[in-house]
Length: 476
Image (tube, rainbow, N blue to C red; front, top):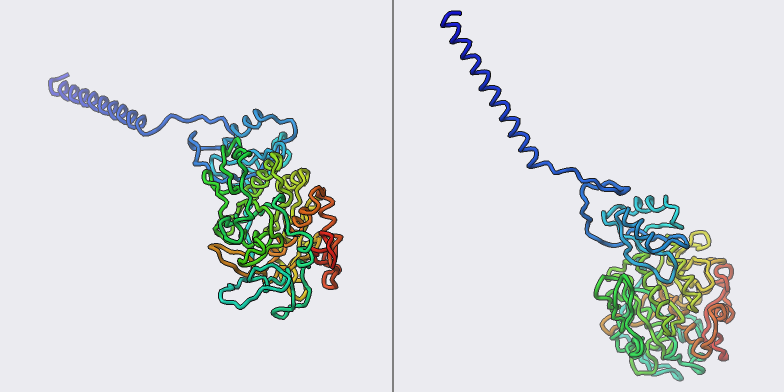
């Protein structure tokens, strides 16, 4: 090999060495870069897929699950942990019933599917939204009114046609609940507690404040294992995680409360069906009139717990509903009945036959449920009212009903929402004179004492309008 060839080969060899070293360095750089940006894979042993093992922010429960009898709390905890969920609340009144919150904020349909496959589960359902549906309203400011002879001195009583109908505003004389005759026997009793399950109650309203339930000093504040200690001085709110004040910020619940028990003969505003009663506010509806099945259940669960603790809650008034049937809601209402509580519910404002198109909770075929249709001031079935010869039990005045409102005001509203507290109020009036009636006896008394109306034949079970005087045993 000559010198020129030797130098050429040497230069080529050196060049190849330099290239090899450079390529190796590039690979090392690339490897370090990949290590710096690619995390080690996370292995999560659950049935659903997740990008990380960090739980999402907890929110409103997606589903209600009732586990089968015999499934322990420990087993429920294992199941929810495996599915990366949590028990948001246990409904103590109904064995095995819990609300479940998905930590991953999955759609309710997927969570329902996950639990429905489990042999430990009796049923699972989505936590549905419920809305209020009041109809018309009319302010009463500046209206000329006067007290009625023989009645209490409440200045707006003459406008309360549901109680005393003299034919005012094109009404029909005596198309009312015979309140004057009933009051000749009883004005109600502070020993009877009626729970208003709604948007809360303005418990500071001057026509309501003396008839509001207040937790007695002898009764400890409510405690729930999941909710913790609750200051239920004025009742209970299922809305919110901390402040559970049942003050009404919608108006609907306050209106219903006034129908049941605005203070009578106090020279103020209106008179309730009961002049004296204790109204327990239960708030599960927001200012916008929205609530959930779970929150309604939680509020009823509270009432049952207070009943078991000695509070004489005998009636729940429920002026709301939907077409969605909930087994969980039905179970807790049934339990309330077993505890001696009548559940009075609005039949709905859809102008439909509820036998064919059920409305819940009024549509539950339970011994303690009483479904109420609405009448106008001429003893006609209100145009908006649902009806049903098999599922709607009786009717009550529900159109253009004057009652209490927010900020000390009074308003007229229409709906089966307004008819419902009329019946709840009459039930409380009956209990003021016969406190030991069972739920079955109380319900039957209300049905047997109605005024039969042609307009309700074939429209309701009883075919009649509630009559307070007959119900309490007073003459009319």
